[in-house]
Length: 84
Image 1 (cartoon, rainbow, N blue to C red):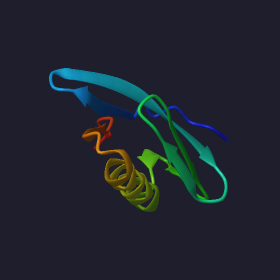
Image 2 (cartoon, helix red, strand yellow; image 1 turned 135 degrees about the horizontal axis):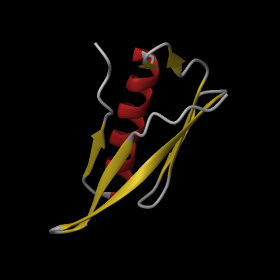
Image 3 (spheres, rainbow, N blue to C red; image 1 turned 180 degrees about the vertical axis):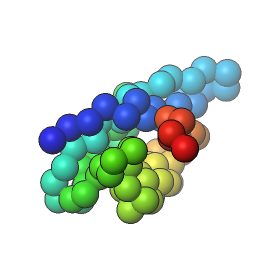
Image 4 (spheres, one colour; image 1 turned 135 degrees about the vertical axis):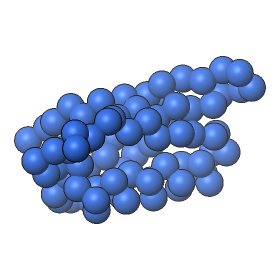
């Protein structure tokens, strides 16, 4: 099962130059691969009725922080607007 919540990560490559990377989320064993041009997230229970589960969101945040620590590129997570 794969949903398309349109989460992107903005990657600062050099001053004033950002690249947007679409996050690909699939269901499966928890793992993450985030580079400057790709973001693949796998989580056991990624989706609920109105978007991502809180645990999956936390997994994404941790993966982005790990990517920043690894390569030094500043990143921002652009979450979709959740229905209220």
